[in-house]
Length: 70
Image 1: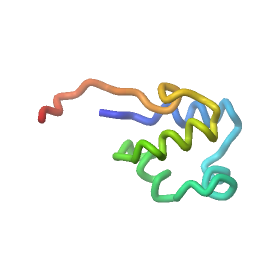
Image 2 (image 1 turned 120 degrees about the vertical axis):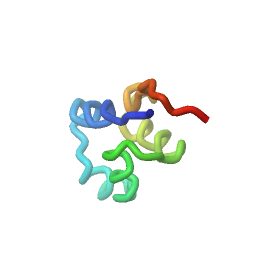
Image 3 (image 1 turned 90 degrees about the horizontal axis):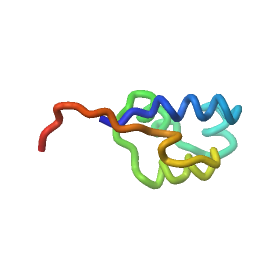
């Protein structure tokens, strides 16, 4: 499972709000919804957030082991 808890922490540290993301940086609200609920997001969304926040991928997301088997 991928969790985006670190995104919200990084945003607090950088003093960037969700409102900033969709008004100043044109991040789609539906993408923010997907991130809030730990749903799938595209890699280019993660890349864009890293550029906006000036951070690394691990500052936005983390992998939590679960019983998902393919």
